[in-house]
Length: 157
Image (cartoon, rainbow, N blue to C red):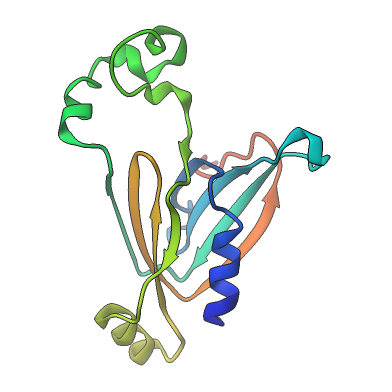
């Protein structure tokens, strides 16, 4: 995958809402579901986009919230918007994270070199920063497609 194309695809996700992320139910690819919106005056309809990081051999996710925020955000009432909105702490119940500062293609690393050599295809490393999570993925290809409202990526039959 061309780095310039990858960077452009990721730039288009900047400042939208991550509503879900994780490995797909077949456990090879990693997906990030983004609710993309624009100024209503633009006439552009909101949409849900699936960023599918194909052949994802490594996924690391950690918090980007400081310990003090966590300390005041342990109350289970904060996982529901209605019960947590007036409490002190991070309201997990908003059910989305702002994709800010956003997604960045990282320089070639030992991991990307090792996987590229082992599989004979290019690998890339991306860091996705939201206001609550910091995600790093090592993968080979990215596909972006629109998904319907209510798309439930992690439900199994």
